[in-house]
Image (tube, rainbow, N blue to C red; front, top):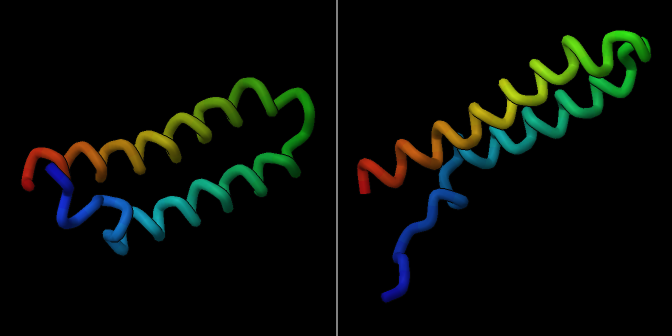
Length: 61
């Protein structure tokens, strides 16, 4: 069975992928002592945003 519409085609998914890339670029500018504390939290939050939308799409369709 093939999926007719993938969550990857959703605009919100595409924009959140760009958001994650922006966060990662921003985190490279953080001081080294913050890279593992605050930066880790920001990475997880950015990725969770993507996962949340994919899960929601799976429940709706």
